Amino acid sequence: MTKYLVTGGTGFIGSNIVRELVNKNKEVFLITEKNTDLWRIKDLLNSISIHEVDLTNFEKIKEIVSKIKPQIIFHLAAVGVNPNFKNLKLLFDVNFFGTVNLLKACEEVGFDCFINTGTSSEYGIKKTAMREDDILEPMVDYAISKASSTMYCCKVAKLKKLPIYTVRPFNVYGDFEHPHRLIPAIMINYLKNKPINLSNPKFVRDFIYVKDVVNFYLNLSEQKPKEYVFNIGTGIQNSLLDVVKTFESIINEKLNINWGASDPRPWEVSCWYADINKTKKVLNFKPEFDLKDGLKKSFDWFKQNLSLYNV
Image (tube, rainbow, N blue to C red; front, side, top):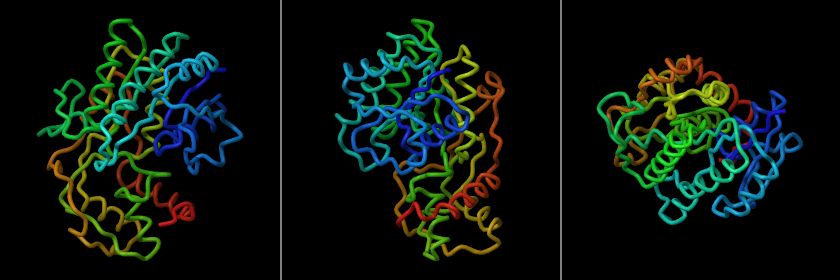
């Protein structure tokens, strides 16, 4: 049976990947830090194997990888996505050197596919849809650390002709997402009859439902193409107001929104969406869920799992 190793498997996207692998009866191994909160996967603990180790510890990573010998690696572990994160040393120790350590350890035992997770923020500010071959101009430290990891993975893939890929997710939303992010905040506050504090209705993003992202990772791991970097988004730009209006159409009710109640981030722009032509052409993959379908699915999930969120 194929062995899957997942880092960041207790996080938002990672836990959804782990859940799908378990549903498919795959053999799943997780690498996590000590004392990691397992709330997203607590019902899966009897179906997976968890190894507690710091990605910055190469010898321990090597020991665990040598024992598992995974064929497929989904690398999603990272720190510093919060813009207030200021520890640059830890940021690069985990996001860059942690990726280097994991990849080196996997190289030593051999593998069928290694998928690194980047971010759309690697692109920085663009005036058109973001393409995988665009010049990277990251505006935040987290994105700089991710861009460095992308470049390292591409270097190894090209020089050694190995199936190493980087996925750049755009704005992923859905089941098990952090409660303070946009879409969970809207849905949870609505369900709890609380006011919803948002920034500017004109701010835009390329919103993609998490199930499409999970399917993309699995699809990429099976196809193993000769290209190395892929966007995963819808290729459609929606504003915060679009999200609100779409959700209102689902619940058939007007939301209690306080616009301008939260501060905008300094890099907010009028253009932020993926060019997914390469994704469609090389992998024959396109998202299944449009914004309304994805929001419906998300809302159904949040209604059923509101007790998980003590906010």
